[in-house]
Figure (cartoon, rainbow, N blue to C red):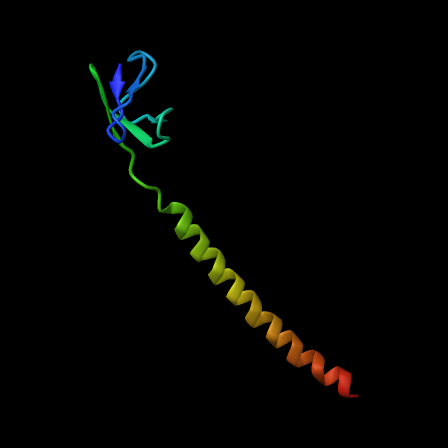
Length: 83
């Protein structure tokens, strides 16, 4: 048995099924937990992932580049419409 550091709920974890660094979720409060010790089982709050935020920023940069290209295409296209 292990204890959730967030809500103090007892969580049944088999020490043979987990390794240090594994992540799981508390069934009571839903907190993301990380196994910090295996004998006895110790749990701590898992660190937050910021990778998803970085990917979103990179995607936004790509969109801005595409918008610039579209503006250039519009300028070239305007000349064709006036003829």
